[in-house]
Length: 230
Image (cartoon, rainbow, N blue to C red; front, side):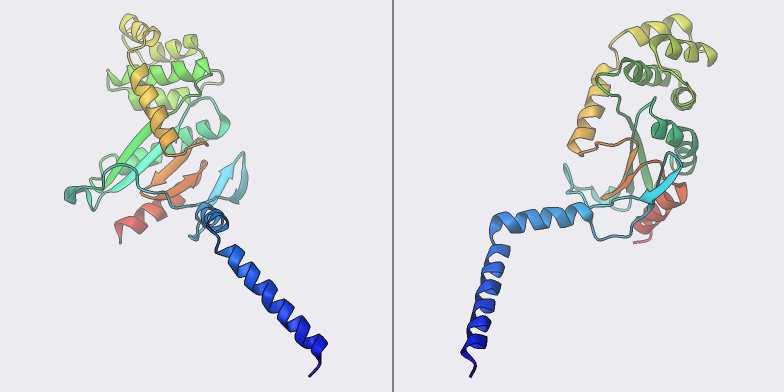
């Protein structure tokens, strides 16, 4: 027998053993699993950002809070996280969001919830979020939300003018806009988005599937239908 070959073979086996030992060490294995969970293994939809088409990441999220009650077992949870004043947010708010609202607000099998998540440091976004909540007192939430997605620059004055354009009660609406009446609710929505690790807007969660960016409504429908048909 060629002892040089035998020695090389033994060295190779030793290297393989050490590699496998390293692979199964807890620290390294945890990192590998976390990376695989981040990438996900599901189908990749398309994301449209600034007129460019690129792959969108999908991943599975650990459930947060109590499980669904028996009455809710067949309900698809559709959570939308968005704000005003950013290009992709406004693109989504003008084009995709109205279609989702029209399709699913009256659908008993889909629980649609919109969370307005302003940048804590952006005064215009904060006043826009306040304005939307204030308009909800007069059942004009969606009307003013769509209008604010059309505004070129957001400010307290601009949000006030949009309210006047929609003929909301001027004194009451203006007082609400200047108050902190809905700041607690806005804060809760921001905290909820942080709990869900939302770091991009718009982001949509359909049960445990993440959809990033202003995507075609067909992509969102496809994922919703996947859950409805399971």
